[in-house]
Image 1 (spheres, rainbow, N blue to C red):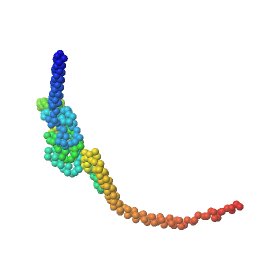
Image 2 (cartoon, rainbow, N blue to C red):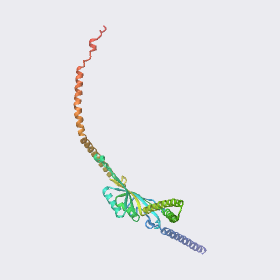
Image 3 (cartoon, rainbow, N blue to C red):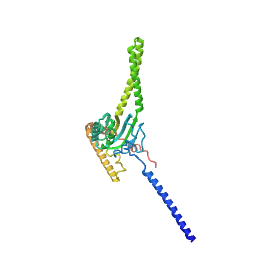
Image 4 (cartoon, one colour):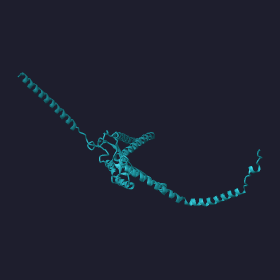
Length: 335
């Protein structure tokens, strides 16, 4: 009987232990789930990001920020207050297989957003390369000024022009410098007003000259500070964007790691055939261009050849044959 009671007590104790273990495991699981699903990870748009890859437009891009805020690992930046003075700038490379069409589309984009071209340069085939049948991929480099409210959208839309293997953006916060300059300008303007009042009341020539010298220095400072603020206002209102447009036959992403071996062999064979064709085309063009010169050289060289040949024959005929030493001066043989 006692043995039976001990077994029952042992069983109850075992059930209680298992129940406590199960409760502990359930609480631990609940805590883990809360920790996992309770993370609030803002998307780039929620964080005010300026990532250039949001629309799948630009690959391998780099987002760079200046003193405007911290940069997240996904390339987004913290949105800045609207009252801050921010100078946005950026650069990008666009690869295209239709150079002329891309340049036209880019010009239309700039015109539609109200921007303008600050500088531009285009390089390509020169006269001698084209004359010799060669080809050189063209490259265009531009610096655009884009209204700040259209800057981000403009950068995203670059993907419609071609492949964008590289892009970057920068935001420089000049609020402190701007505010300091504005305060200094106010001080100098107040000083100018006072000097003008003193100048109107001055009676002696010495006082007038001293006031005018001080006034000249103050006005110089006012002009310098005003020019600096206007320059900042221009950079803040119109962001600077440097774009390089490169003419290519294959996009950067269409390299040997993304195409099959058969396609690589086909492209190598095609390039070889084109190279041979360009060689013979250039050689034939060279012969045609040099034909008049070759004719003149032939007219001069043929008579000279026959004259030299005749002179050699005449000289050979006048030269006597060498004497036979063995025949005329043969010593007697010993018996």
